[in-house]
Length: 202
Image (cartoon, rainbow, N blue to C red; front, side, top):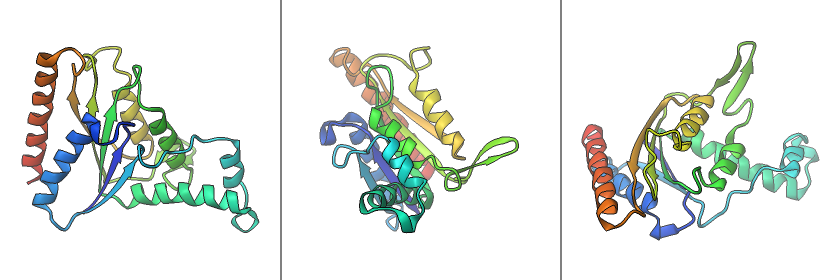
């Protein structure tokens, strides 16, 4: 099994979403010691936001690209190959100002490419990355789950569905900035969900 671990937090090892997703992965690796894990950590290597230069590079024939264009396309190609070759995507997802981290949006823009992760048809776009599972560890300072202020959940579901992935599970840890009691409660609920996921996987 190939696992892609996406850490979208800017806080590195101090990130709760990283800690929860890593705890889940540790349990999974105890069960499947042959699993191959690729880590994409946005705190260690930033994801460039898509711009005119990248669009120009993608629209230029490979043999006509300059060195900078070739470098940009090669990085985007690497991101696409990582997710295309994975069986499971584990996503650490903090909430920043009611939404997803901007680098996660940049990552989505880098991997959403016609002919690679989706295709256009007469009936609209069709995702090409089928038979994958996504497990999202969503961490929030307040309480947003099942409220109109939770813009993350539909955004994440919609994007992955766009590229063909509909098996998306969420583990929520909320109230993390609402005092020690709420933080402990939120973490306990999240860890309970992690244990259930690990049990099912076993």
